[in-house]
Amino acid sequence: MPDIFISEEKKEPEKKLKDDTPVEKEVKEILGKTLIKKEVKSLIASYLRNPKGVNFEIKEKEEKIELLLRMHPITNLKWILISIIMIFAPVVLTSFPILDFLPGNYQFIAILGWYLIVTSFVLENFLTWYFNVYIITDERIIDVDFYNLIYKDISTAEIERIQDVSYRMGGVVRTLFNYGDVFIQTAAEKPNFEFLAVPKPDKVVKLLQDLMIQEKQEAIEGRVR
Amino acid sequence: MGSVIFPSFPVWGIAKVFVLFGMTMYVVFGFVIVRQVKLMTDTLQLGFEGMIRILSYIHLLFTIAVFIFALLIL
Image: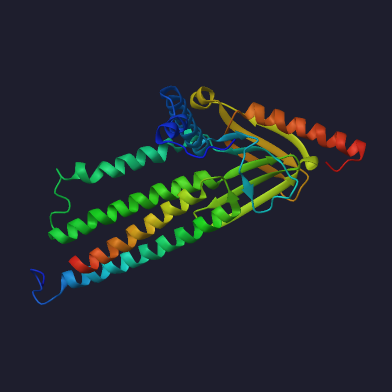
């Protein structure tokens, strides 16, 4: 039977139910932090297996992205160190009177101009690293290259046209951080694909071999996918 | 303001023209980056397009701000 009159006192427990208990709040906080951590991780990740929310210009409707690769984050160390030095250079150079021959306003603009160069340097290096990716789908391999922010080069090769896959790993840093180069020989228009400085090259090669076997099986069975 | 050797020669006036020319080139470069980021994000959608576009716009605003600042104080 519906209530004719609901007193204020009766309404309160409902409100209380909506409020989170301290434990729930803590759980939500942890979950939120984990999600943020995951987002940051996927932003700088260079080995993404079955990535979600990833799409590219020439992707076919039913094509499934198996792996997204980019150069190992450690390869960015060089430009990051240079950027840090560039950021602190004006502070260090205040003890050397290099710009003293300029009037004060010119000195100020020179420093602003310097930081403009630093910003561009950081942005260009980050964008080049972030958008130069290698994609392996269930049907083909795709190499997306952007040169100097001006040129774009996208090469693709069908998995069934891959003839040989190999990888090279050497040196202290590469062994320590587990990254190397993957070489793919194809019978496509572009005969050689090089996935440079990608993480876990052994797993990449294994995946490509599995996909090649799968494609061969599909060809025997007469399936398209 | 002239130089010590040639008092009537407007050294800083010419310097200002050069600085502003350089800054103009930089503003153009800022626009090129914005355009390029758009092209990159259209080619590849990796999940952080919005943030990267914002970064390119911040860079462009910074170049324009420095240009205006140079125009005003030099």
